[in-house]
Image 1 (tube, rainbow, N blue to C red):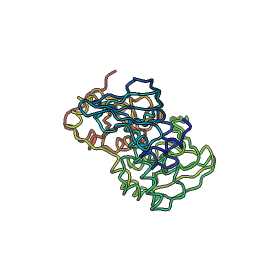
Image 2: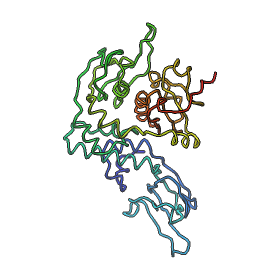
Image 3: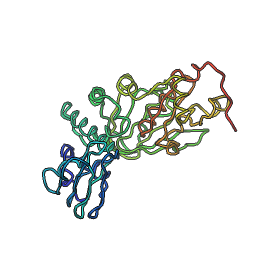
Image 4: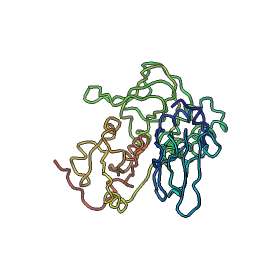
Length: 346
């Protein structure tokens, strides 16, 4: 649509920043209605918010008097059409209409992220609100409490980097978590003398969490593909600010309920550990390959992650949560399970 200006005419879209409006314009759908066509019916519990862009919509409810007419361009039309669910009215086109449709969750997440970013920019005098907005709009950061986000932005340290610079190196201890503010980076792992590419990261992506969460050495090397700028967070701050709110720990009793409801089991240990014994029905996705294989997972399905102690699966959970997955971690890992493991199936 044309239309950032048109979007800003509506309530509560008028509260969004320019970056928020751009993001919203990529998510909305324009629906065309003919006279007499229903947009929604009384009693429905659909998952969309509608704004009248052009034309006229009549709202009527059984036993509630004459229909209400909403015409585009009026003050009434600046507000969502019958927003309460279940719908309190039938919504019918009285003329040819154009209606903006946006998913309820998308709109709520966008407004939350936008207002959180705006608050932090104001409080911290941050010099790049667009980058901050892109960060807090990510699924993982939407679960981080506002107080933690304030602490995060206060403690991030900018680091200038150049093309070809190695930011973290496989085999070294981990001391920092990084977010890319400008530039791109390549993730690769040395395996049996061969470099295995794992991922390419762009603005807003994070890396370096695996070693911080697992307590092990870096399992991959990250090299800048172009000049850029990183935001660096020390290990202690990372654990306190990000790890605690992003990792959902569960007991084995809770695991049984999740699996019964359709959740998948993922063993993030190495292949030889998995072959020696694992939980029945689990899929093996070693932590070092998770960036490469995450695209094969169903984003609509819940997953339960585990390793030997819970440390590697905690790192895996952080990585997958950043990608929008709903994941849980078995507290204590396999070491905390009392019954024997089953060998993996061929």
